[in-house]
Each structure stands twice: as C-alpha cells, then as structure tokens.
Image 1: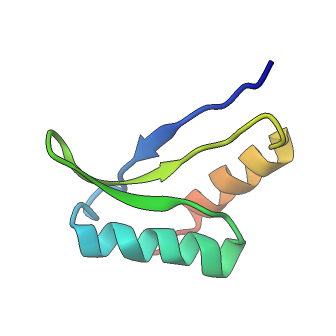
Image 2: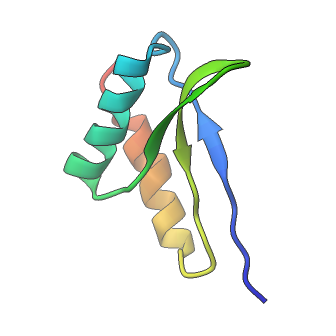
Length: 72
C-alpha cells in the first residue's frame, strides 16, 4: 500500500503568485526542499508540498526548520 500526503501553505504577507514562486525557489535553492507554487481560483496563491512514503521524519523536521528560516 502506498501512502502520501499533500498540503499547501501561505506565509503571512506573502500572498501573491510572485511571492509564492520565490518561496518555492528559496526552499529548493537554499534547503534542497522541492515544493511547487500553485494558484487556486478559490483562495489564491500558495506553496504545495507533497511528502510521501519515502520521506522521513527528518525530512519533515528539515521542512519545518526551513520554513522558520524564510525571509519575512
């Protein structure tokens, strides 16, 4: 059986498409964490992350730490 998750997030004050493209790029370039920018018709721009079965708790901890280090 395969497992996966999907979640999306927004950073306070960073709600435009340009902001969210930059966040996804920063996460990849600085932290090696792959995310994607998405625009949604209902709620607007966000960043999506999709952890899966092969991701570890250390991977999730790295994501949380990287989110805490994003420039504001």
